[in-house]
Image (tube, rainbow, N blue to C red; front, side, top):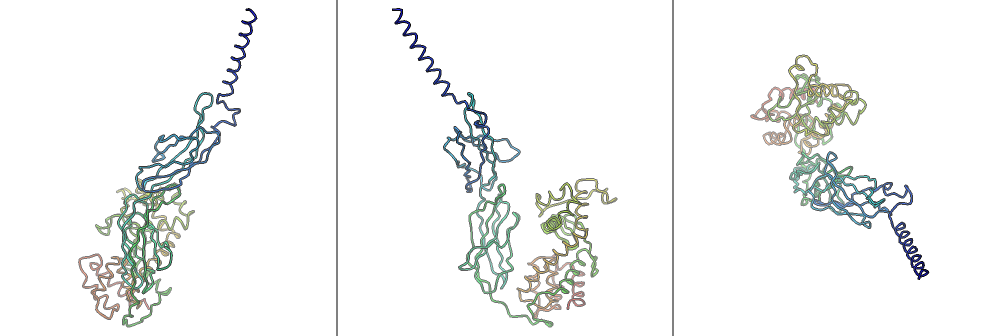
Length: 456
């Protein structure tokens, strides 16, 4: 009996050892530190986007037991765990999101090591849901101009404008900021069929996520109108260099030059509502660039002369406003002390001081001249497309366009006796009352005289 008991004890010992060995080999303990999941990196990417969902994907870890997906709506907010998925998953569709909104995602692989869940390192990704589609219309108003309009999309960062002709693909012709709801295509060809498309976009990381396409019916531009019976010239040629310079000096003179031909104040700064109760933003420079035009000028200086910009705005106090503020209503107000002494005391004072330095230095003046020439050429193209070709007549209407907009040009032309000449336009201006153009009689008389004297 003693030998049997000894045999049984030996069998029990062997079974116990077997169980111990099985337990040791089945525990999820990494062989070495290098095999730990915490040394893996999981990089998330945006695979697809819609107005209400984002699909993210990530690289697979060979030792992961699963993945944890996190989301946040701002880098200032903490991460929120939104889903745990299996080790075989490499993508996830996040639904029920808000349209036109950025989201950031992170994915972490996990594995049980030493009895605890251990997580990988991660590289997050930022994406955005697509904004809603807009409704767009187009109208051909001349042989070279089509006006495009659309409904505002609130949750977008801007708009891409596309154009196409029959048998050709869509081409981007402009990118506009979110405040715009219209665009004038002044590069259309006469007697040509066009369709237009406007696509809102939302930025997510370094990607612009576009709304679905919404295009207009086909519009046809009319043929080139017969030339008017101007007394000097019926040529469709553009202003030459001398004529461009005359036009620049005229506009500078009536805007900031005290109505003295050839004078200008390049460093002019005008607070909101000073020129007109309708001007809700600041106006700057020799040519009185208002609101988004002022923003356009400052961007031009920054992009063309970055080292000069850094000299005057080293901490980006002004530049942050240029890229982040709504310039259709951007206001800065001088303190009483600054008005008296010229020494900045407040944040607004300092911004005004720097803006004046930027636009008044030789590089800022060069950018103002460049911008003025660009605007003169844009306005000239619009006016010549209406059949006005004689240089002095074009110049007078450029003055009207610069002061009152395209609507003022068509209004004055509607009152102008035929044939259209400088004299007949000036006569029509003298009958125009109760608006920004007609109320400035002295300005119109000065421009008329200068065009007679200097525009050949």
